[in-house]
Length: 327
Picture 1: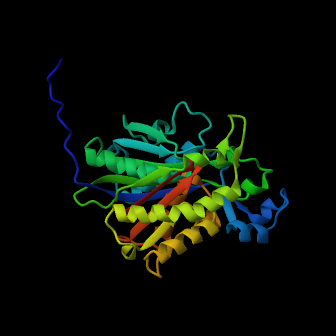
Picture 2: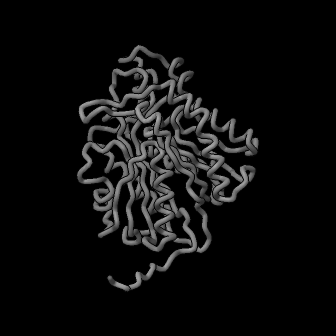
Picture 3: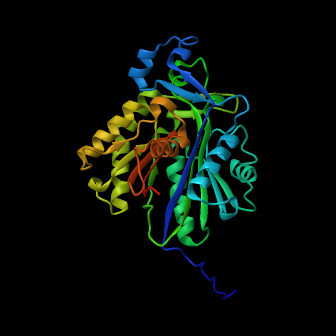
């Protein structure tokens, strides 16, 4: 038996986000547009899910092409070059084929040479899962700078005649650069799953569309997710009153508002900024949180130094909450 000792890699004291980027599908689809092919109308959709328009990808836009655009924007925002990236992680559940995975294709599209690369499928919780993984591999010394992207083309997987789902989903990608830091600016991820509800959102096989039990998912998300967000703040040693913004997965505006109410009741400030990007972007699954953050920074709603509490949730049913400081 060998007695050789494995030498641990030099570790980093912390991790931080250095930049954000996003890309949304090029086609703007309003509620009135959907009413031309579905038995629905603007008032019904707005009242039910809070969406007024969403973005659909064009025929030449893919999960990978949108991810590349978002990644390029994040690199520019962080002031970095492709050569600075040593690891690429893509959170997605809508690749048309599982082989090859998205991350290496994104790396090729950006000119990132020989990175560690892999995909994560935690559905709509994917970005928060990915941020937990990215910050952990940096602290462990396995990586120094990670490009993390949530990217989805949900229109490939949604039945356009399904009134319940066709009004909700959109396409897009959101990216973050996660890098080593002397001061930790990303908290401990609080994650888990509701395994007994695994069948409430599913795709039966490769020839099927997304199915979800809408009311069951709504009840679960409206009641079970706020405690996850609160647990994430506690795990990071941050009082809710210190949080500047709550950015949840943009699933449904009513769900977002229900989570925000519970977080405020638990001690968050009355002036807590609450992301509502779903109104004009739709539900983009793992891309929704980074898209919302990037667009809020772009609009000046969020600024450098803001402390963000984020929570994702979706098929699986999986969930994850995490706290981070904005670059």
